[in-house]
Amino acid sequence: MKRVLVGPLLRVLFRPWVRGIENIPGDGPAIVASNHLAVIDSFILPLVLDREIVFIGKSEYFTGTGLKGRITAGFMRGVGTIPVDRSGGKASEAALRTGLKRLDEGGLFGIYPEGTRSPDGRLYRGKTGVARLALESGAPVVPVAMVGTDKAQPIGRRIPRPMRIGIVIGEPLDFRRYTGMESDRFILRSVTDEIMYSLMSLSGQEYVDIYAATQKARLAAGVRQTGGPPSTAAPGGRPAPDVQVPEPPQDLPGASVD
Image (cartoon, rainbow, N blue to C red):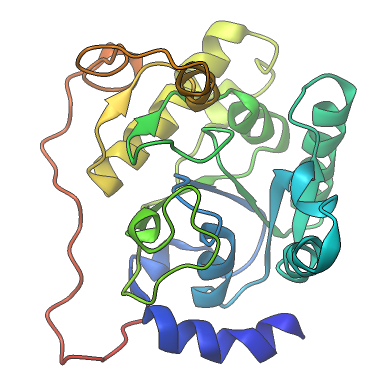
């Protein structure tokens, strides 16, 4: 219901353009793995899909106080976000099991492999939870690059500014060749790096080979590093793909492509 009410407003404000929508399976389970640039990622992506999608989201979105907290919690539930305790342990395991249940039911499950929003627009090292989901479920992984949401809603900005936002959807990745190997940490890292490489290729982002949460902690502690944090060319130590940040289609001013 919230999507029906809010969807038209979001379309007017952000005029989303989409490439590769045909890569979303018409039915059956699939893991939608996206880069994460802003809170509104979880609002815009469901808006352009014909199928319902649910996400994992940090539990803080559901525990805020006051009017803002209640609105945020209600909106997160409305777009199908599943709360997860980012401190790890049993709570995170429960969230993964919830994802597996969703996939077992034949639905779409969205996940941000970086685990948190990028602090500076770059693509950070992926966590292996997405690989576990893929190997344990056998579902394909559809990589998705959000484009421009960090410009519309930089970290610290509560209300996003109206502007065009893009979504680039890549071809599904099949990892069934690794079935039964979900306990092998080297396989999990390899699968995760392959997913992140695909996201890098779609988004044109610079890759940083540390976790986004680690970089956020360094920034919060006032740690400054000349030239930024250590980086590598691409996930898994591969050469960086020769790509650029996608541009919106050259259509008429104010037109929407979705």
